[in-house]
Length: 161
Image (cartoon, rainbow, N blue to C red; front, side):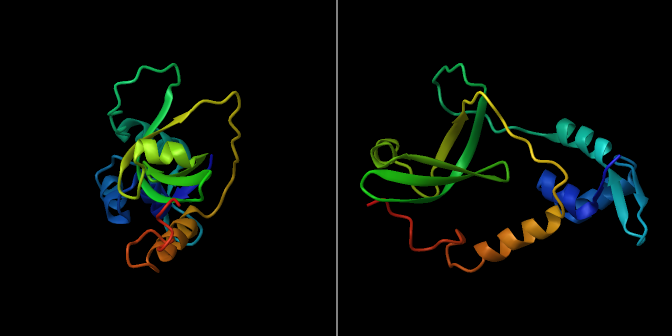
């Protein structure tokens, strides 16, 4: 069974490492020491906890669709030209990127800080496994975001022309 470090469980749940350690101390999440003495959490136990504690954001739109994969998020970046635009959103801690027409960006009034719903409709979903280490990727994203004054990591490219 795969094991996750405390910091990885925290990143997946969007909480601090201290919160995960409190859950371990209260017996809400089982852990054991790894070879170097750090607490690790059983992957299956973490999956159960993630599923139990997940709080999806309610979809604010009133449009009825057959697509069930709807991710409510915050627009973090909009870049493009007169024809096409790249919209980046943060949905439940995951960055989602979409290439859409610049006209759609204007009609939907998409800009950094606006709320939007990413609707995923696909016949296939690819899943990559055994990705390590999660904690270093989270830190790299945080460092990239801290380089700009607005926190987007890509300051200066917010306008669709």
